[in-house]
Image 1 (cartoon, rainbow, N blue to C red):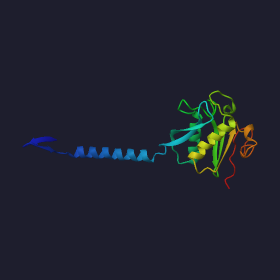
Image 2: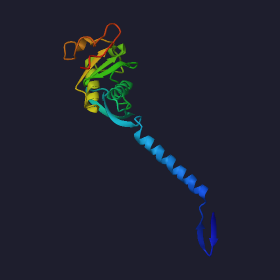
Image 3: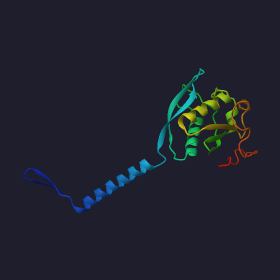
Image 4: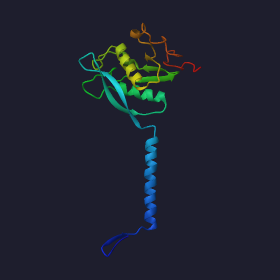
Length: 187
C-alpha cells in the first residue's frame, strides 16, 4: 500500500503480494530452464547451394532444430537442404518434391536414401545428380564433423552416375526392393 507522510513515499508489502511475486519469479526461472535445456532449440547451420547462372557454390545460414541424437541432427540438416535455398540467387540441389526416404547413422557412416525425384531432371535444380550429391555431402561434412563417410542412395539404389566412384556398397545394407532395410551390424 502506498502512503504519503511528510513528503516521503512509503511502500508496504503484504504477505500475498510477496507470495505472488515469488511465484512469478519461480515461473520465470522454470521457463528459462526449459528454454535453455530444451533439445528443440534451433542452431545455425551452413547449407551449400549452386549459384544461379554459374558453376559456383554459395552458402547460406539456416536455423534448424538442434538434437542431441546425431542421426536426428543429420536428418534435420538433409531435410533443410532438400527444401532448397532461401536466397533467390541460389538454386535447389534436387528437384522440388525430393524427400528423405530413410537415414541411418551406424559406426560414423551416414546412409541417406533420397526419393526417386532426386534423379529426375529439373530446370530448378541445374546440377547433375553426382554433383548435387557432392554438394549435399559437403553440407553434411561441414556441419556434422563426427561423420566419417556418407553413402547416398536414390530410391534404394546407388545412382548409375556414382557406381564407378567410391560411393560404398552397390545396394544398401539389408535392402531388397523395400529400400534401406536393416542397418549394418553394430559390432
